Image (cartoon, rainbow, N blue to C red; front, top):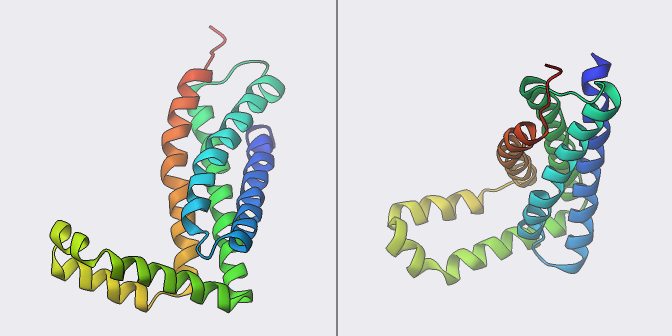
Length: 170
């Protein structure tokens, strides 16, 4: 089993740690680092997946990788990135409640300034529901959102990279 997931563990852990570090640095520079950290995740996730699959193919599997092996290694990689990133961000926000309050007030401010546009696009009920959800948001919600937005593109990137790198011994 270690043959299959050795590179996934390494690059998934590295990607998750880099994502937490990026959140910390962005929090120091921006009042609301969540959006920029998601963009960083769209960069680090495919790089980590590619490296995990490439290292598995070249160093653990004699230059071959099937689509199924690629999907398995990629799954472990992006799930590790998501878990480490989500937990790390949650812990940071629990450790620095003033940062969480800044993020929450920033999101409420954006909702308030875009109220008319949002209502015209999705309706008053959706706006009120979103406003209520943001008002009752907790630090775990931000960590969970970050983790989900690592998993969704991670699946997409894993499919593409697995197809590109696949090479069977036939």
